[in-house]
Length: 115
Image 1: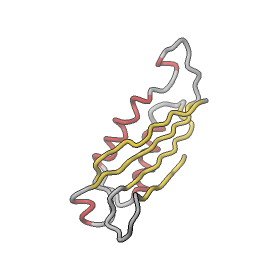
Image 2: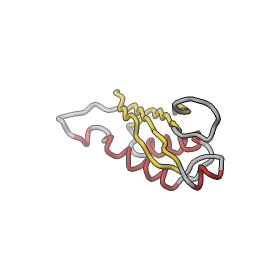
Image 3: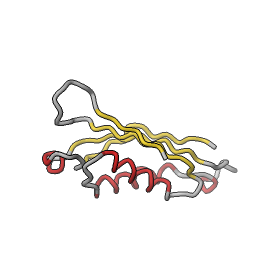
Image 4: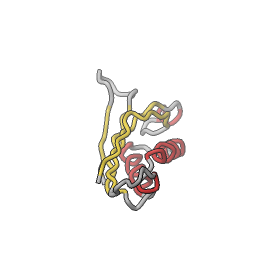
């Protein structure tokens, strides 16, 4: 087993509870950790899981989603990534909202979900 990690994927989304989040949108960042139960053989991509498939799947989810909660988005990403290949054992996703309509000084808000 091994883990594939992709860090700081950035997408423009329309996810959020407030009307301006739905209308204007905002940047979200996603980190992905995927535990794979495979042993790469003979330097063949077919003997493992291609991480090149992850970004387009996540982009499509975010482009279509108008969810209120980033937790909902995280669940959608986990299910979609797990459906790519039976050798995927565990998916951990971190979703960060960078520009929030919240009073306060901070870099971002992040949730982490694992399944």
